[in-house]
Image 1: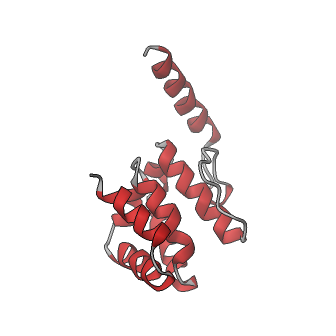
Image 2: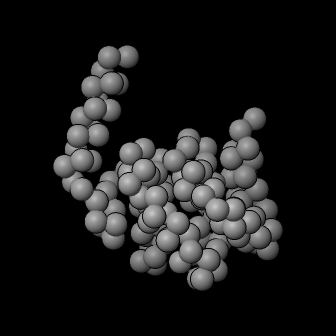
Image 3: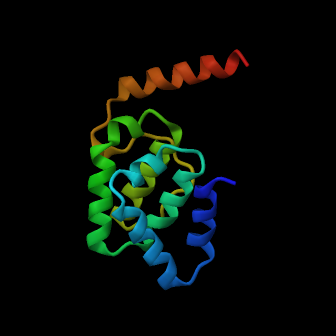
Length: 126
């Protein structure tokens, strides 16, 4: 069983206090948050963890994700987390599966288009 899927369930169904503690624990491990954000099951856990963080911890999460934004943009999972973070920082409800560029990180539109073209080409060959 994938550990990130278990974390997602704990973040979704735990008590409010346990969810907040778990989110803070994920953030406390250097590099774990951005690593999880790039994976199939990890990105869902990250999106569940973000709204459970304190304001100060959310800014630390933003910093960690921003520092790794170049790598996060390369996966649909990472882009989804960046969009959820942006929505959360703006006070909106985080989107569940958004794969559009995120303005606050100053993403390169041409690079995103190239990645989408490559993904479409790869899917067409399957």
